[in-house]
Amino acid sequence: MTTTYAVLSEGLQKRYGEVHALRGLDLAVPEGTVCGVLGPNGAGKTTAVRVLTTLVSPDSGSALVAGRDVVRDPAGVRRRIAVTGQYASVDGDLTGAENLRLFARLLRAPRSRADELLERFGLTEAAGRPARTYSGGMRRRLDLAASLLVRPSVLFLDEPTTGLDPHSRGEIWDVVRGLASQGTTVLLTTQYLEEADRLADEVVLVDGGRAAHRGTPAELKALIGSYAQVVVAHASFLQEAAAVLDRLTGSAPVLDAGHRTVGAVTTDPTLTLPRIVREVDAAGIPLVDASLRPPTLDEVFLRLTGRAPRPAPAPEVAA
Ligand code: ATP
Image 1 (cartoon, rainbow, N blue to C red):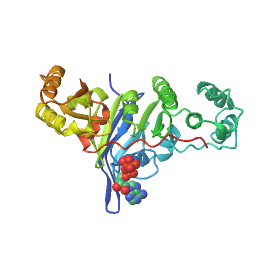
Image 2: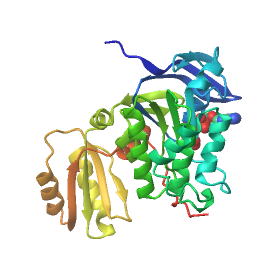
Image 3: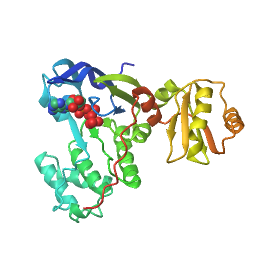
Image 4: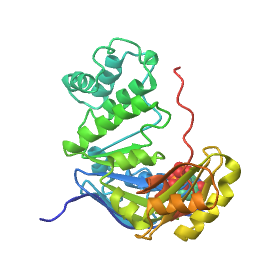
């Protein structure tokens, strides 16, 4: 069976003056899948999304989105995509229902579609209330509903849950999963690597304007092996514990004084948890906890890019 790609880019380049934002970006996102685009600050993620959504032209390279060329047929691309992100486009003075019906009129979508989406996103009960009274999660869901009035082939989700509390985040994740299961292709940029881990079929790690690594979350984790971590009784033991882990794993340990943890990746299949415990104990270090587990995507990111993913901002406060 041949794979049909909803997003297919080859060698995309984009410069802003001296800054080379994209240096030959290749992407291939199969239809109906969720692709998580991750990368450190300035890696080129936003530029890639801007090119793929026809907001800026690439200097060279090509990209097909929903089968249309972003340079030769930008209008065709726009008809088949939706873009939504952390900056909700809803009007706080209008009710949820009024917001969606207004967008429906603008987009020539049937009013019944607005009502259907209110229902689907669990907003029917709140539909008569001004959107400014909504929680951050509800506003984000309303915004997402607005972008789905005309069914897009490809949905670009830019940091859809930034600033949301864990419950609201979970709600948005359910919506995204539902969309993908109905055949919408989702290209997701996010700073929450757990989000990519939960949602993405494939992750592309963009660095320096290129796709530096790609694979399923499990494949990317397997690239760096296992993660050995110990929690010590007091931060003053961290350096000694780091020396033990350094010796056992052969890789540079990462210290976290606040959580009194030290961890290091290992590709040694013979390293076992009992051995780690024995060696830390033998060094006279009071141990509180120890684990040897697959790495999180955050740890993969740190290892592959040399930088920590952005720290999460404080949760949004209701307006
Ligand atoms: P972040 O995670 O910080 O949003 P990003 O991966 O989205 O970063 P881009 O916003 O695509 O990265 O930026 C890539 C590079 O291009 C950066 O060095 C940025 O400063 C530069 N850049 C982006 N847009 C412009 C612009 N309009 N004019 C000049 N330079 C730009």
